[in-house]
Amino acid sequence: MQTLTVGEFKANFSEVLRNVQNGQEVVISYGKKKEKIAVLMPYDHTKPKMDRPLGPLQGKAGFNIRDGFKIATDEEFLLS
Image 1 (cartoon, rainbow, N blue to C red):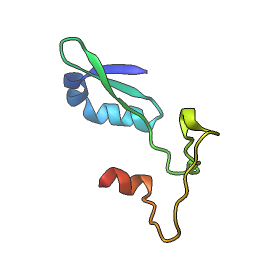
Image 2 (image 1 turned 60 degrees about the horizontal axis):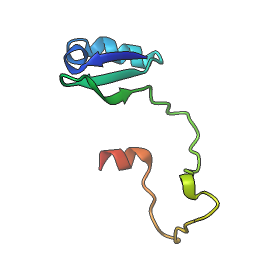
Image 3 (image 1 turned 90 degrees about the horizontal axis):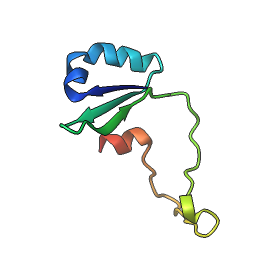
Image 4 (image 1 turned 90 degrees about the vertical axis):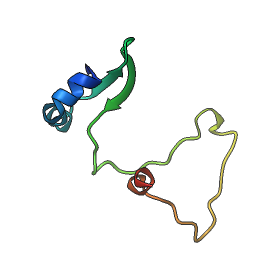
C-alpha cells in the first residue's frame, strides 16, 4: 500500500488514479505529523451486495424495515 502526502497526491493525481484502477490502495497523509486521513481503493461495481452486520450487537439486537420504505443505494447515499 502506497502512502502519499496531499501535495504528492495532487502532483501525481492522474498516475495515482491509474494505480487505483489497477487494484492498488493508496493512503493519503496530511499535515506536519503526516496523519493518515484517507484511503483510496478500487470500487468494484460487480461485487454483490451483502447484509451489513450489526457488529458487537449481532445476535443481540435487530431491526425491521417497513414496507414502502425506500432504501438508498450506496451511490445515492454518497451523493446526498
